Image (cartoon, rainbow, N blue to C red; front, side):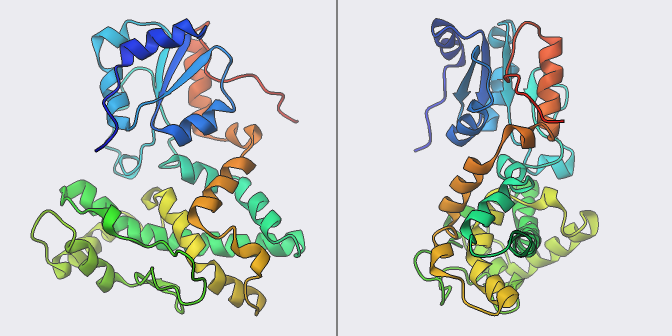
Length: 308
């Protein structure tokens, strides 16, 4: 079962009880953790367990009339299709990155995390490895992203949660991620299509699915960041890191670095390394600042000293 649907009006008044005057809905607990580090003392963040709940809340008359209410969402694939409703009042989002994880990945936090993991390497060397690893992972995630985008557009009902690409404890045999050819560092399109059609709620043919993907590629350019789901990039990075390290350094990934290359651990380290100065460079930050100017005296983010 999913999370129960929140009672936003009740939560709004509960936030008021705790001395907050700004009520901001976020998609989940990870979002609350990240943006909570930058939030104003007068801002209460509420995980709403899905952007659909946030959009619905912001269009309800009983919540629209309450002061100091906003919501932060990931645009996901509506960013590349340009199908989201830009006119919903108080809806905040980044218009360059499709989700929170991609915001983090495109910041210097990734290199900072990798430098710690590869503390025996020179900074420039570690950074070059990180650039290579991220570029390859983002490319593979974008390729896989066509399958997600097609499912979004056509409502095939494909269950991506059954598609297990996570490695667990084996860093050599890579038994859990057959959708990537780890030697060639390429997506196995036929294997992926067959696996995904088997988890669909509709009767799909893998060949038809691949033809539809080819048509999507003509409409949406390959490799675009907007095709990526950040969690896919993280999982792929964790999976291919030993192979990329071997190619880059002509040696096996050190035991000391292997702990980082787990999807969950990598996500945690990335969040820990993310700083306010990186947030300032996002379009989400500017959108929040614009909202604050239009909704004085309500504030979402604190004022931090910004170098330079």
